[in-house]
Image (cartoon, helix red, strand yellow):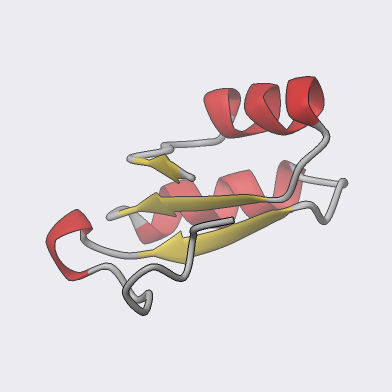
Amino acid sequence: MDVACGKDFYSRQIQQRTGRNIFAFDLSKEAIQIASKKDKSESIKWFVADLAKMPLKDKSMEH
């Protein structure tokens, strides 16, 4: 998970280095739109969201 992902630099690096699916969150709709258009992997799921109000169920990110 990448919170405050911005326009994707770290999300992309994490995905490329781990080969895992990534959930990336940012408050900026514009940043998420830019990042999602650049992402060709389809391994990163992009969300416009506030860290204090994450749209996830409790423990949904656990292995």
